[in-house]
Length: 426
Image (tube, rainbow, N blue to C red; front, side):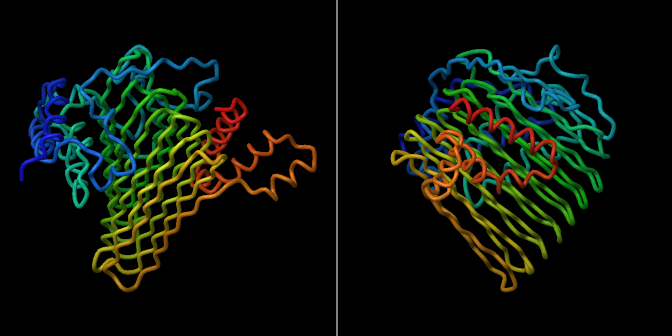
């Protein structure tokens, strides 16, 4: 079926600005991804899962622009002992990164993999992204698979003593970056991956995660605080038997952020928790789109998303739980809530359940409302200023999402950073 003329024109214009890197062992996956982009076309406002978010600036062939955000605040996670991997405008920085060596982990750059004919990542590159294109098309992820020139492949075979920290720095006002990461967690292995930083003026990132039986991955990400950045991120995760995946994302400001999570529970007794907290002010649009598929017995999933919006900011949540036939004993939970601090902001939600098994416990809910006036009055009557009282209630509202972070040190770092941002009015 031919693409509509408008979509085809936009797709061709964007592709004309891109060059596929030397492919090596990823060549077949890249060419397949490009074919899928040409077939699907880049997203348009009429696409079902883009009706709340305008994709125009994410797909435009025009040079992106975002002023650099300068701050004297310390780097998030800066006090933690971690392996630092730094990218500046989407390009790996040898000078600022640590040596890519850590017990229980093998790390290679995607650029190096592209120069080889044989590498373990060949079996994963583009595979989970391709699986994640059904039943919902995700053309920006396919675009990334085809053209991303940098990123890392992380092979976890043990239990490393410290987290792996992916740091994204924004140095050019016209940077247009793509990164593609692959993470493979072997049976019985466990790792924590951290991400933080604005990355680029426009950022397209894809992470493919394969967790073998009994493997565990903890993921904590912070996006902020550049006011003019635009980003589209995708995480595709496949879980084996008795494996665990827990992911948390904090987002503050930015013109447009679209975070997609596609999770497949394919082994019995697997656990997947995905959570997000965002605080938006003014010209801010934040979209969480999540698709969780239960395809095994006795699996558990949780989706917990909280958004605080003010001065005309917009928040979007689209979340689906799909329980396939035979996926009995499924425990699926989904909640999305917004706290609107004025009458100009809005929250758009589309929670979904699709169930083909009869022995399940699934629930979803979505609420939106203003700050609790009774609680605010209580704090004010005890001498707390309006600003401090509002910030206290905001942190309390976000707590359920932050509580999904299992490591207390990481959770405290996120809370401390939130407190600082709120005290500065973001």
